View (tube, rainbow, N blue to C red):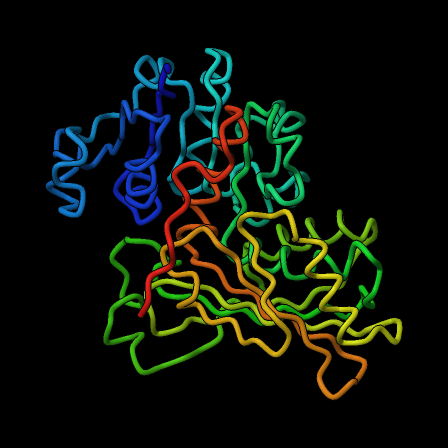
Length: 347
């Protein structure tokens, strides 16, 4: 069987090494190139000792003539990189999966206002598919360019989806109270990411505006087929991996706790990477650490008119690299869980 030839642009960050970790056990993949302008020539195993004996590769310059020989290229880069290389890659017949935000926002004016730069290739946006498999599986199968969802948006959208598709909540009063481990800030050296700055503390950030807000709002509006009013507040947790999103909505009907549980179970019954836990469960980020799973639970506290959903993912796996591999599997007609059957780490 011919193996899928993979290139990774931006391999020195957390999502880059996570892609390498997952693809190392993929039965149908061969990583042909991994790029880094700053580390070109350095052996991958010298930067990431956990990959010793796994990859005989060195970082290289991101050259189009090399990447154009791949079947698929992942961009594990800051925003603004993928959009400058994607048109030439797809012209060469290469499929692209961008783990950054270059293709996530459909409205170019909105994208440019949040990211502070002109978009380099708005002409290809019509064929971009938003890579949330649970909602867009069939479109992903035929896509040439995938906008891999952000970590917060994945946890929030999957949690709200059953409520919005059934029109059960007031879309003018949605709240997403979300928390992330420090790896979500990336691998770059920043004072705010130092252990002495983050340990033994817990804080909100981005309250006045976070770049994931327009992405989440866009997704929820597609589900609801109407404009939504969303309050999104992210928080930084003193841990490395994981996202927990607590979601609140005001119910429009007197649906019971039992029927809410049934709705969630039926919505995700066929999904290999969404686990609706039994009633009265409390999902913990440790339940998904290192895996591509999203686990969630739904509550109607004290029989009141507010529904509460708690949704947990590993921000580096289902929130980034794992979901990207899941999208690749769909694009190449492979088993959706190929290379993604890792069991979560405990403790």
